[in-house]
Length: 335
Image 1 (cartoon, rainbow, N blue to C red):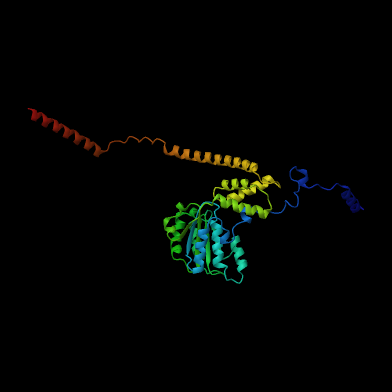
Image 2: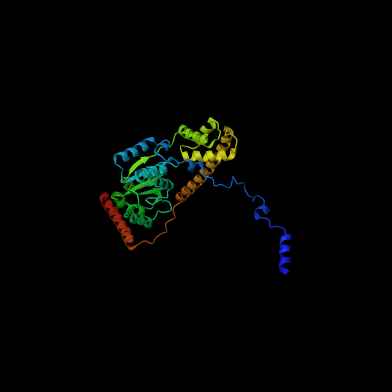
């Protein structure tokens, strides 16, 4: 009887409302919005040598090296952000390791995702110490699991410490036959000359605005988004030679415009926002520079007066006696 009464009370009680309905702004989003979104810069990342925009000469050189069997054991890819260094490293690694394999497609996809067991991607900013370099050297001696080469792609290599660079010198000069290095950096001047001399260096150029605009138009066509040609060209100029920056700016424009057409008015708003960001960065940089100048320009601390030593006293007395003798000689000459 008691149990039936309890069940009746539970049935009459109002249903508990979810927390999202009680707090404004936490309502459940639409089903379309709940799907994970991949940004354009990742979704349209280059996957072949021909897709790397603006670096045709480097692509041609690497393809010729593969076809003739004259690939080096170490490469250094230099250039500003978003010009294709890491993408080119992955494409090159896939051409070396996936070609002719039974599971070529699976291996190639794993390499392009940065998840292949034989293509090790290392972030130089977070793995920069001597211990990390020793682990790399120890792993280099192990043969690859399923591919021809064990390839190390070290991104932001200029962040490695001096002891780590020194530890890698011997291995990079005479690595095992199955090991290849691809170093990527945005600041080549910070890479020691001893490391650079052991690599084939490729300098990635800033991408021309016209080529960036052409690629952005292709992306917009695949996404079925309408845009003015002048607006796309302005976005390409704002990218400053970086394809990734151009795609990121385009993503912001698409999100701001919604389903409407991308026009020059929206680009002007984006340009104003970017200008404010640049001004803030410039002000912060000037503040840091002024702090350095102030620290260098501080007046030197006054030196404490030191008590004369015995030797200095003797030198002073000798000087006085010599001056006295000179004066007496001059008096005799006059007489």
